[in-house]
Amino acid sequence: GAAARAPRPAHHMATPPPVQMFTRCKAGAKLLAGPPDFSPREDASSVIPSSASSAVFSADGALLALLEGPAGVGVYEVGAGPVRKVATLDRPAATAVAFSPLATFVVTWEKLVEGSEGNLLVWRLDPSSEGGAKVASRFKQKAFARDKWPSTPWTPDESLAFQVVTGEILVHDGHAGPGAGPPTGRLKLEGVSKVSVAPCADPQRFATFVPEHQGGGAVVRIYDYPKLVPGAYRATKSFFKAQSVDLRWAPSGGGLLALAHTDEDRTGRSYYGESNLFYLPSDGKGAGSVPLGKEGPIHDVAWSPVADVFAVVHGFMPALLVVYNSALDKVHAFGEAPRNTLRWAPHGHLLAAGGFGNVGGGLDIWDVDRRLRLASVDAHMTVGCEWTADSCFLVTSTLFPRLRVENGFRVWRPDGTVAHRAGAEELTECTPGPAPPGAHP
Image (cartoon, rainbow, N blue to C red; front, side, top):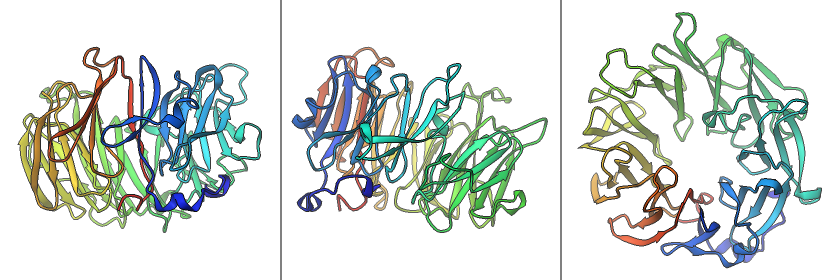
């Protein structure tokens, strides 16, 4: 990724990148810098069009992609240096955009129309190309699913990229760009509907999901590249009651949580359908159900970003919040409260547990290592909830059109005090930007 961009002046490296946030409301799109008082970056307002939407940051927060309607997709450098546009992707109909892990590539998707050569485009960012990017490949992909986006996921080092097609998974040379040449490998797997790439670099690891079919159970499997024969999986788990599944990797790649969901609860006890949580260690030893402490739905599950421990909030309200390690031991039970949303701070020491939607709006902030609740506040009307990249603030937002009154955002300190609040009529997006590892020690 770095090679494709002009080198940044060395003096920027010592200064941590600004903590940034993209917002879009009736008054237009803005790139804010803070914290805590998040005000518009002056160098951005003349560069970023006010009609821009659907902000996506690169993993290190240095680039920002925006849908700009008739102008196509804009890519901006938004790090420590001045904000500037680095690419214009001429796709006025694009409705989704994503970066590859090192931001070498940008992927766009638009509705497939008759006569199209392809509606899923992989672009290589390249300052020497016209518009700052060139098309590396294009595919036809009829349906779009947010939980399978981008549809050509890369390994963290971008050396491989994967793609689900009918009855098999194709493996591509990720550096050339998926589809730029013939696939370098393929795994035949009848009915496969999803692939998920592990965050570890060595070995290169991925998981597959095959939904229930004709009375047979759903199956999740873990494979290590380059062993691409159906029987060569490292771990496998089959289960019923799984119309859909979320696959969530431990930060080390040493295991995978599968959150299985079905739309109806045959017991009739839950309006939300039934959910089950399974854990698959990547070595295949002892895959099984996570031993939950309370009956009822699984509201949210989240891995710590820095260690192989995960939090689960589950059960009929008031829900139970428990942190487990990868041996499925309960590290700590944080008690019962009406909560349904979990957000770890990027540094992994703080955990926010919110009760949003129809649950009342309570928000707790826990110091996980000290097992201490630092704050319990009223954050009613919250739709969005994200930590800033420096782990110092939690941003809650009241977004339109889900809620049509009191639109705006609040910036909380971990002790529960409000550092900043801003009203914004018809606020539809409020997206804090990430930062590279180690940028905020």
